[in-house]
Length: 79
Image 1 (cartoon, helix red, strand yellow):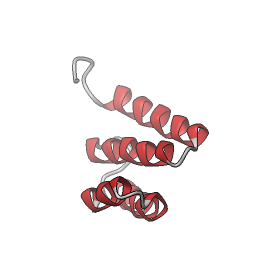
Image 2 (cartoon, helix red, strand yellow):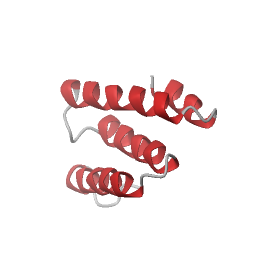
Image 3 (tube, rainbow, N blue to C red):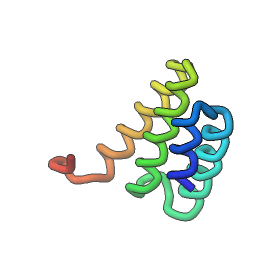
Image 4 (cartoon, helix red, strand yellow):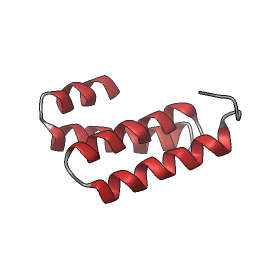
């Protein structure tokens, strides 16, 4: 599902890609929780799609939340 959203984004179908990525994020949160690496990666990917639509405020919030989750979950030396 993530790759479908990425491809749609590359094909300039951002609204559809964002909708799919939002559903994926909701599913990841429900299944894995907020601190799982897959959820964090999905937050980052959603932030990229939102940024590509020109919404820098929401994108920044998504990136900030993803970074906060990553810092609280992953080891300090994780790339």
